Length: 290
Length: 290
Image (cartoon, rainbow over all chains, first blue to last red; front, side):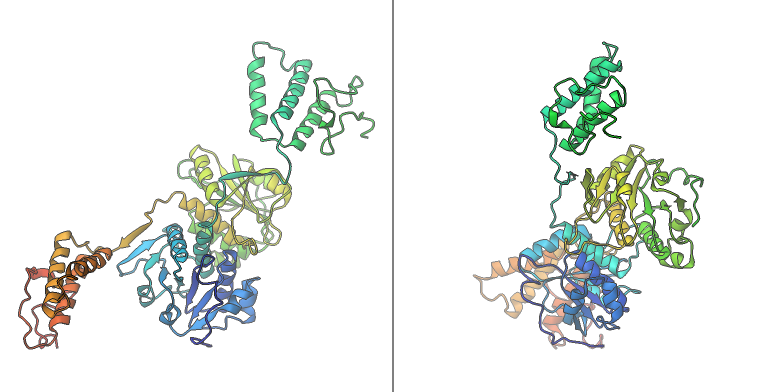
């Protein structure tokens, strides 16, 4: 077992300052493969600094690197220590992850609430570390005693045990989320412009004109309500410009298809450009389209 | 691979109603082991229902059951389907997890915001499903097209790929958290009573009396500030009854230790019961304690 209490500290800027992240400390990890999968989870969550307390296997073995799946850099930068106390010597705030309650009087938090506190500590220039115990047993009480706060993941009480990488992932995920500001829902339009009101109204008039003509809206007393409902349906879809063009084509084709009386141009003020590449060309005859 | 579109539906009550959970749909999973680890993550998050679309391997193989690590019941209750469409036939709201943006115009959400929407849908009696793609490739566009909403996990953009079980874990974790109400921080006292104000004040008087006597508080102009700071320090610790008893013992032993002039009882109105089993008995002489 290589040990390197005398290893140089991590490069400046990664462990303190505004871009700092919590340090992951794996205490007595048993399998190199699990150190690798933990490193992968760290990389997923932009956690660069790994410390190992008395690891049983070589964390740069082929197995570990393969399990890290692209996060080899995290393993290469890792340092090993003889004791948990040595690994934590320069840290100001320490969190211990546990799956079971201990006979210790400590504040208990969740990964989510803990993440907010970690961000605050890091922003104040503190070095923050999170302890994870060995695969089989979890942290020893003496390791938990070195921490300020216990982190417990709220999970199914009947089955709350996580493997090492999953525990690292959930803590890291919450830390990462605490720095993310994403809207509840956004529409991915891949660059397509949303249709403006005028374009929508032109489509509605096209649609309703054809529905009048084909007899779908033949009951005058029902017509206003039906029109409102149809318009609402299409408005909820938050249509894009290409989609409105496509719908124009859909309506025209449904109405006229290969009918011999198909008009060369449809009525209702539909702009000439509504049928772009995305929809069947409005002026093409059925014959032209094959 | 066995397929069972005609399999009976899951037991009533697990997939709709107030206790309902989202259904996990693994589309064309490649390795049975990964189906097993996904089942374990489901069990962690109290997600009981698994559906498999054209799995390549037997999801009840020895490997799968071993990987499930106690979540075999999830595998046993799983049903397989020939197509994603068949697996989703009875579902009302469908989420597709993807790591990369698609050329599809769909609402995009996060696991966290999606979880709140899933809870709302489930509470309204809807059957909610979440699609996860094959290990190597993720969901095909045709599968994503069957979903209402895309779920993207905000992670390190330089390294956002998750393995199947981790993707299931993060979505399930957020769903579980949405039903959990935990305080930001709570003190785990393992049944120990918090000390009341009277007990604290008695301890403060004991401590300050000894500090006066030993000369630590000998500067009258500094005394009030020092007393305030000492009291604040101990109040922040949210002391329990046994801890205050221990502190009484600590103060007395520090002050008197094995000194021959050690008093039989200390002054300052300290109640007779402050030294319980948890602390050195205040009336014991050094000799008695060995």
